[in-house]
Image 1 (cartoon, rainbow, N blue to C red):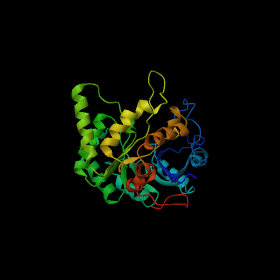
Image 2 (image 1 turned 90 degrees about the vertical axis):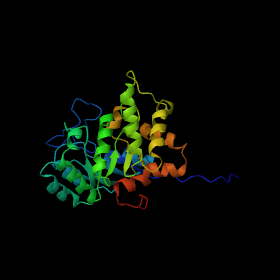
Image 3 (image 1 turned 45 degrees about the vertical axis):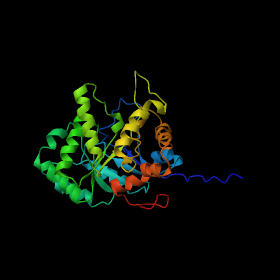
Image 4 (image 1 turned 30 degrees about the horizontal axis):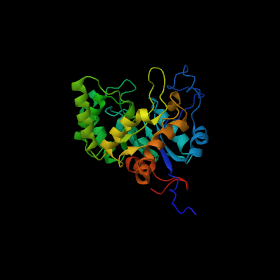
Length: 301
């Protein structure tokens, strides 16, 4: 008789999905109608059919719209489905209206933070130098909410050091870091590596090991071996306590189907042991987003 213990399945909190409805009368600012893969409704009901059979028990919705009222739209959608445990909204910190807008949406317990970075024609480097922006980041921090960044590049990494020098208690989640294009010029590469190592020393900063797949010469390598070096480097810097799972669904469909996206990181974390895998797939998300359990399938927080 085989008496070897079998590890229990790990519940998964997907910390990066997008929700939108292309059939709305007002339409959507993203995705573009020309994107035949993405331009269809992406709602909790569709996500459930794809993700729940694979072990996903909860998800954090990250805003991909610059329209203010889409914060309310997605909160209204999320409250109706207990699979959604949090929403990361879009409010423009540093603007005079930020505090009032923040107060409005923060009243909803599903609102877990905001997203700011290299998108929506915003200049993050300029923002972190402005006292109004820093004041709004301090408000975010005092309220116990977090900041997600977008579309990482070496300049963003350096700017995050400046931001957290000014607001050291702010929880920051760096989205899609495996997609960053590492500098090839020697001095720029040294500066980037040094900045990344410094960020790795700051316990309030988390990294989503998401958007791992890359397109290379028009093809997408399917094997973990191609990506292992990048994952090893980031895991080595941030450790098992500050890495988080996110699929980037449905944007991830531009690369591979959801099951492939999940399987790639499951393969990687199968070599790290049960404890590290549990932290990556759900436990670290509780620390980063402070979400609250909404149904019995979700692990206790």
